[in-house]
Length: 279
Picture 1 (tube, one colour):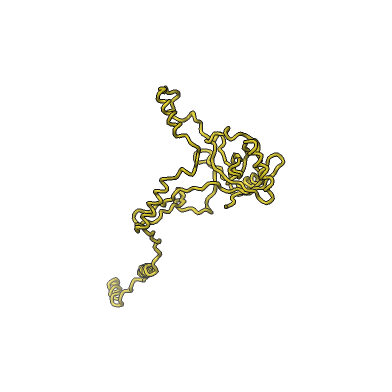
Picture 2: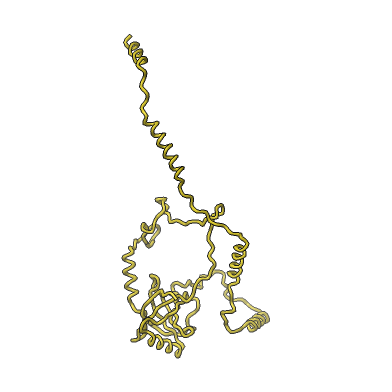
């Protein structure tokens, strides 16, 4: 499993060297956008709207827009130094809370933690302490240039980091439109709804839930592939040397015509012209 972060988790005087691994992966079926006419993949280019030309990565800087069309430029050196200052700090567990105290709306992404060299004993100590107390640890850590609020808990004998949103990242629920304050519900309707919930209540088994749309989409793709309903993108046409040569010859010929001096008049015509001028 790929290691995406190495660091130290600490609580009190206990330091645990750990490695972090992504616990989830995106299984969405990726579909490319093709040009309808020639079935070639569409290319997205970074273009400056003012200069009207394509911009390479070396010509791009980062900026924060503090007002309309006004920016503070942030150099890569500034960002790298700031990032290093935070990454060099140990991830310290600052609080212990109950898992049920945190609403699921705060949870963002999950990562597995494994002990790094020499960290197995301390890893086991934290795992056992969390299991026995039924608590989870709250900490701050740097992940991908962002300081994350996170919780550390036990999942099937493995320590897991769950990144969670800061309170100001969760929108105010009071701003959700058209939510009714109170709705009068008939007792018979409520009893029927509760009975239905009781009938459908069971233990959570994640294995029983499947992404039926993704499965159907993959089946459709496989069917089309097996029945030869496929297409091959055309290569970008390369310059034709023969065409280029003809164009160069034609351009040279046109230039030669322009540069060619005008023919001089015959001597007889010149003499006649002089004689007429003398008269």
